[in-house]
Amino acid sequence: MRWLVLALAACSGTHAAAIDARTDPAVCKADLEAALDRSCGSDADCVLVQSEDCCGPIMLGIHSGTQTTFPAKEQTFETCLACPPLGCAHATEDESGQPALGSAAIAAICASGRCTSMVQ
Image (cartoon, rainbow, N blue to C red; front, side, top):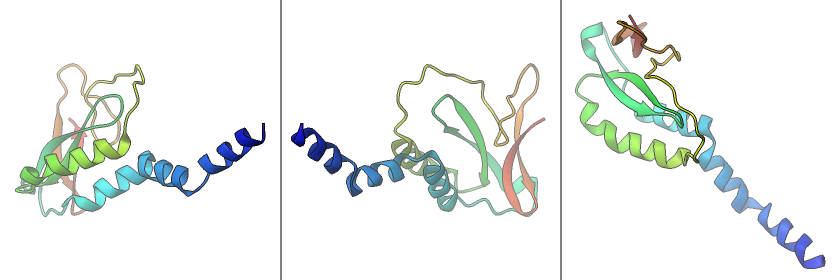
């Protein structure tokens, strides 16, 4: 019994905290956001790229011309999330979580100097 207590104490140390911090979805999302260029002056400055949460695609608006570097940033994000099999799925969404249903489409727009996505 004493060994079990010691093993549990060892597992609850800084290593476990480091794993939790690395896979915390909020931390992963913040790191992705920090890596993206979202600056814009008009809608023409923005393009869509596809990101994934643990249940499906999310379209992001980023600065046009930076989309070639996005795949590596997305891979780092997905590795950070380390999504377990959840059995969930959602339709493609804009950044606010709105799905593009029926004839609706998601567009990249410039809102207050920041590229984002919006169902239109």
